[in-house]
Image (cartoon, rainbow over all chains, first blue to last red; front, side, top):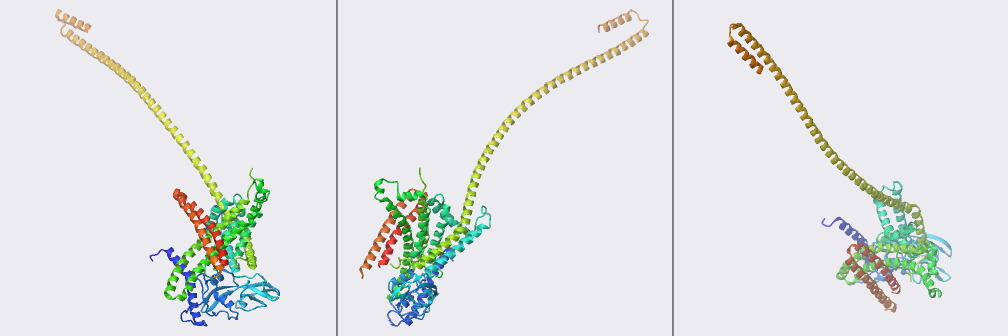
Length: 400
Length: 164
Length: 70
């Protein structure tokens, strides 16, 4: 009524972020109080029942895996003191099923296909056969050790990892992001094909994407790459939108969002390798000459000082790209998760402390989510800008 | 170190997905979008250039038209002046002519008046002569027996007639 | 109370301090530049954000290592 439309929409969105977590938490609290083996009258909510505001995976899964006893999938385990570190680590790591929520003690997760080549050949099956702690054809998920949380098999008495190309949660997230990107851009491109390009001013989706593409093209790609920027623009734009969409999707607590895509080192490694290839495969001769035989005094060239530094520089630049993106997104997710853990960690200290800490936590989480929105765009922007700068530096022409 | 070691399966899927998306978009989506954007930008640039040239032309044309108007003004002034002088001249001529005509008419009128006066005078002399003759006749008739007084009167009359 | 946890916490604090110091210098320079020439505020703001992101990247690298050691 008093608040304008924008503020109302914003508040509804933030509550939508908060409510699933709150409801799951309530359901879990009640359920764990009932099923806790050791009933402690002082602390009815002393469990590791968490579904964070990001609505990601359930640590009860890990508790289930931690218990060696085979579990009927879905019933919450015995009470354990709440372990924030474990919860955060679980949400950041990969998993073989996509946990959506926990409703009245039942874990609702989507089992994902496991594709493994073990010593007995290729196996493809749904992960619900082994996420409860079961074994299938000699494969099971390791509970501890160096391969904790991953599929292993016992070969010659020790645990070994088979060749594992399962569609884990992060891989499914990647596929979701790729599908979204394809739909968006192919729809926009179709809008241009049908019409006279010169007179047509696109509206709607094509207009929005054109505005974004144009601003990235004009502010980042054209000034940094230089002359033949149109040759590299497709790769740079793909990278920008992939990172931007993955970051944004990682902030959404519901399925299909919530997967920690760019916070995974493998994903950023591939992106950095792609930039490395784009820079070095298309580098001019002058670029390589400047690396291995730069225009400096001989005493820096002869003991190969400058060439070695430059050669190492070829690898450190994409490495920095990889680490920057990975660390930023991972840190952002873990901060949000840690703040939400404050609620559950202070749960056993009584209602007053818990209530106030909940309020503070929600406020801080709102702020962190807004900051993460900025970081989502900024990291994509910085990645694209640095890639274009590196590509532009490699396109150096011979100066007379 | 768990978070820092990339897992092989994920590397495979990420490479595959990113390569497929990149190839599809680079072939089907981005060339169209980027082509349209650059074409529109070129069109806008060329339109701006053409607009600038057109503006220049308009300015030139404006200058030219102003020039023509200025010339026309000058000519108008000259024509007006010429018209004024010729009007004056015509008026002067006309007045001179009118004067001449007037004087001629006046002269003519005077001559006519003179002629008429002469005619009237002649007529009057004729009448007078007739009257005198009649008078003389009457006198002669009446007074033939008149003496020298009458003769003297006749001679006086004749002298007076001759003198007049 | 393992030594690794202590080391992790201390290095995280050090990394945060270094990042805050670097970004504050950037912010100070940006404020002064904007006060000198208000019409280029947009350009300066964009450059400031980009440089802050680069500094933060390095600091978060240290944070990630601390995470490992925690």
